Length: 216
Ligand SMILES: [Zn+2]
Image (tube, rainbow, N blue to C red):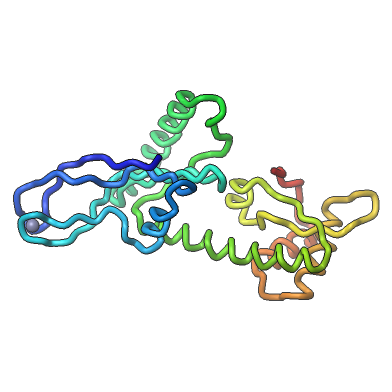
């Protein structure tokens, strides 16, 4: 499902140009090894056939992980100064592409914009840390016999809230109160779950405006 594109490149040392294949579309759920390459900062490097110089090719990469509701457009670092223009182009391209897909493959989450693979690599590392925290929370929630409210992944990501929120039974099926009780029990077991602690603080804030996150 992932694919490469052929591009012509010049070695920074000034050798003759040559053609190479670079990864331009990554389906992270199908090709996990490519996700690992991104995390390792190992994607889209080329070796000059003339002088063996190794250099990075900063090209457009689209990274798609439907299970995680993540669609990222990664433009070259040099495009950053023209953010508004690329933001618009990304929206247009994503929409056109979505319209061309069969109904079963259409997505309902907004695309995300990045400049340079390094920025995306850091974002992805943060995502991995969050996943580890979510796994610990899920394990503890099961142990504490709490139920879990599953938030749509793209919404949780964009609002920096947990993707799985432990809930305890509350009077009158009050979801906010359920979450408050669930998170209090969870954090009594493990205080180091940062994103859960932050969300509990939000729930407790009397001036906070809480609204029900969309569930899966
Ligand atoms: Zn060279």
